[in-house]
Image (cartoon, rainbow, N blue to C red):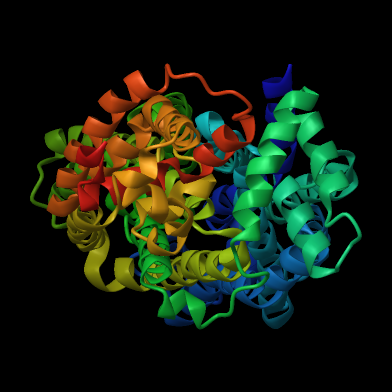
Length: 580
């Protein structure tokens, strides 16, 4: 029952993801429709329909038309979203973003004035930026650790459903481009109408209560939200206690400079932003936004819009597969597998496109090569959706502490949309100057670099509580003070209360350290691998100590849950386990 409530909240909020999915699917289909070309292209009809020979003015318009939505999203994510989400609330920010999106969608379907059309694109983008900034944050804060990955991918699933729905409608001759640009207003209106029917983020409720000096510090609102989400008073009490303890040790509101001054946070900011840039440099939006034009120019023996539907169906299948395995296989492994598979597919697509575009294929082979190009792109989309579609959204939302989360997430989402803007702008120019095969080869090189960076830089976060991320990223020194008297000397363990406290701490370590051990061993850092091996000793020791009596130790046990990751890393570094 409790899990069902969490799923229902996340599923409704993730409707906001449909906004971007609809736009991606709509743009690629709308720009090849006769009404759109007639309304916005001044030049020969055949040239306006060939992505490799577009009139320069029209190519510039298509670049701006696609990329200004992303630029608006970047501005919305870094300028407006942090204030809305941090001072008003996560739900309130999604409400505001939805209204802005609706306001921007309406002019796009009514005007053929270039300036007004492009301005409306940027305005709707600002709304999308606010929503896509807030939604992953909201989901990560209400989801239990064991479901955080799959729930975090709901936004990606809704994006993909939006692209499939839009691509299918664009295949219909009666469906004009005006309806394409109006469609994102529908899910935006649904989110705006219903988001306040669901509870707010319990973590934000506590932060908001502290910031505004509420009498109870926001505890009542946080408890009500947890009671709704977890389904019982006991579960709500336990999680509220852990969240309060975590927030008590953080600054009320971390500064921007803290993101760069603190090594652990700086590392996380770099990883979060790199993931967003690498996601876009896979070339996915080149396929989603300009797929029909690319297939048309490459000579694929199917209609461009039919090819778009097929590739989007593969995108949907891959997304569903990812949601079933992300909390079992983990984030890091998915990224590595996805980068490798996409590299092979884009390289093969470049070869097929080269043979088709340069005329080196005979007429008998052109049909087979065209289908091979389509197959390569479909497998590419499957691989992307299986890994890089959702993980770069999930990962940043779960690694930052609450006191800097709004600021850190704004940099990540801004990077997502800035990279999206860059790719959306250059793709028409790339296809025009590098041809289709050169464009695929460019993104194959980017994918190779992405796989190398993930291997060396990105640790695993699967199954790790949000309150444990500091220890995973090496920021455990400030958390050690309460443990020092008990860990540094044998004498500190002489009395029963001390032994009980150790038993509590190590029991939490023994029962829930497996995800942390996996993260350490997969981090690529040899010193962490050594720590993980040595930490196993403390796990084995804990099995014996946890059987000792623990009279009146519930409070100590709760605190042990908070410190277990830090204790393991510290004991491993100092060899304190041998003192026991």
